[in-house]
Image (cartoon, rainbow, N blue to C red; front, side, top):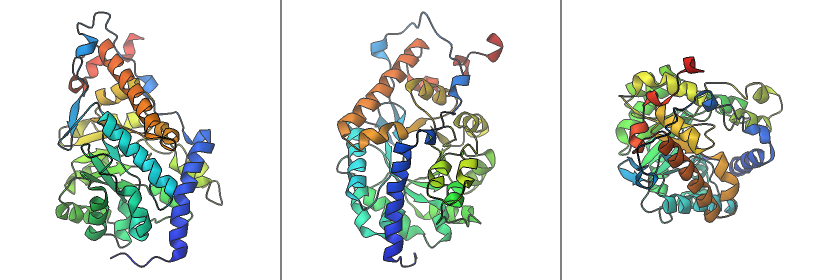
Length: 350
């Protein structure tokens, strides 16, 4: 059972959400632009032998159809009106574009009931997959099945992210850094919860050892979330009294490295690629390297602060870029991109 939270702690938690958004919007170096997808070159087909209009980009995720392998990745949520509006705009866009959506950490609503409304999104996205979200480390600070079920029920979620963020917690002035024996607790939670758990890093990548521990705990979904996009270490550095966060701003595995290292486990689990994916070509490369979905957050944030229409416009742009790259590779179905490394130009060729 979670311990009682003081009004001061609640205030700090909600302010932290606002600080995170401000850092993303005001510091251009938060986006590291180092996901490494530019190091891969694709095999262009001058005769693609297919009709652009007939291409199939759709697939399924968590038992529901989706338009293309795009995931609105975790961003925010909390008691403030602007956080609720951001999530509503994202949810409406997810439904309009028929793509899944994950919410930001729901710890805020566990500790402050006023934040619950920002995660009550099913009415805005009635048919697409929705993913709830809690910090895995909170299992060492009193969270358990009750808190997980409250997070899932608020969103009416199809899966639950347990995010792993040891670097962020170290840099946070108020961070929780006891990550000991987490897998045992994750295993017990996974046995009790009636929807899948997805283990997710937040920008440093999952290693093979992390994946193996997850598999041993019964986890079959992983969001690799490599470095190269938004640096949470740098974000938290703005809230800290020292430069540790700036020193570690590029710590970890790139998204491409994490995908490459996931290769031996592809038959045992479903992998989501996120971290620094900034266009539809990056998406195609990530799917070829093993991602079933591609998580995108930072490119959507400013739009989500304004309207769902602006978010929809950006998602449609990603979809057009993805479809164009798929066409130029001569691939009729997006499912045939997955692990099709023959589409990567060998490095010996240039």
